[in-house]
Amino acid sequence: MIIGSHVSFGSEQLLGSVKEALSYQASTFMFYTGAPQNTMRKKIDRHLTEEAKKIMKENGIDIKNVICHAPYIINLANKKDLEKWQFSINFLKQELERCDELGISYLVLHPGSAVGYPINEALQNIVDALNIVLETDFSCLILLETMAGKGTECGKNLDEIAYLIQNTHKSIGVCLDTCHLNDAGYEMKEFSEFLDLFDQKIGIEKIKCVHVNDSKNLLASHKDRHANIGYGTIGFENLLNICYNEKLKDVPKILETPYVGDSWESKEKKYPPYRFEIAMLREKKFNENLLQSIQEYYNK
Image (cartoon, rainbow, N blue to C red):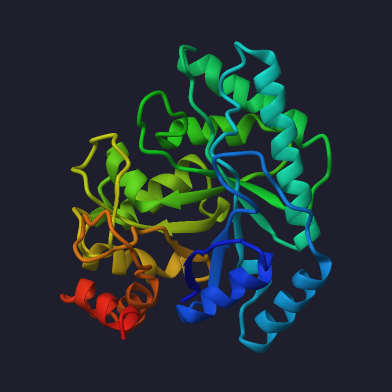
């Protein structure tokens, strides 16, 4: 199983991301090239990138399975303010350029929020923006993420994702998010049936990444609150079945579950759970003492 988590991209850039992923015993990872909430970006350091690739090769991490995530501030769905819409287009181009410079194959993108536009117009705004972005040939492939339908999010169902893919002039792919799918109303205990529906509407070959997250919410709640693996409403067995689905065996699985502290809802210092959640999924055994395991490991 190709599995990892989101990791930081700090002072050591891709090299730091690789080191963090290896500390979780991961076989892939996902990162942002800068803070997801702002435009501040450091120039890519070629030497750090080469060192990162060397360490990946030594540890069996295929860079083709490494994922980048576009910043949240990109919104292609709303162009009431044309300057902001054009900013989103330019910033997405910049992120794709950075991915190409790093040698990354996939960039996950939230489709955007309508914010007052009718959904059909918002979807067309996204299509128009993507077609402008893809006038430039990038090696990195955009992956549209399936969304929970919080607020005015676009991409909350397969019909919306299908419209975006079918009307974009160049090839793009899809990143499934299990929490988002649950919150959007797709039953994850029936994942095989969901994949059949996806294949019918879009084509299963378009799935290039899966965000594996439990959910704090009930089915069709449209809230988007991630829970730790096996500690939410989707449940460990259902997530395990998703991870080991034969049709997605070569697709990277990425955890975006919450950090934990002295309690599940602690506001104090928190620790990443990924080493232990990856182990759970690899060993196919639920850890009923996940919180304690994390606390003991990071406080030893």
